[in-house]
Length: 106
Image 1 (spheres, helix red, strand yellow):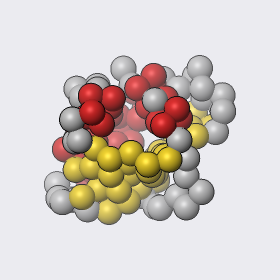
Image 2: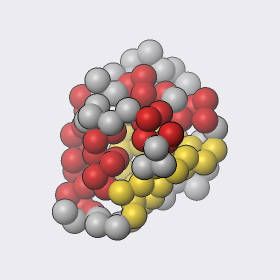
Image 3: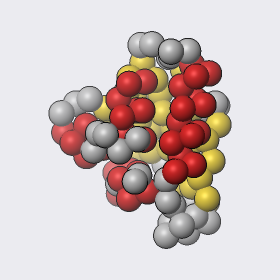
Image 4: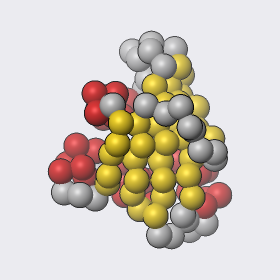
């Protein structure tokens, strides 16, 4: 998988997520390790989700993981809390806001 394919896959998964209950602004940056390495961000603003292939320097949460684990989380096949507990992902920043990811995934 290429970085571009990963971002497209994440955009498609984010389109299925429901952030309508989240009215605050939350910015996640994902640093991808291994295959499809790079960085992209997921931003929630007023219940809308936006995914872009750029770094987000004023982020609330930084998630570092493999492309495979990020896709599994975004598709609801891997619980983000379990992934953190099992050290499949690293999370830095506001852990309270990081939990929002679990809320929006179907």
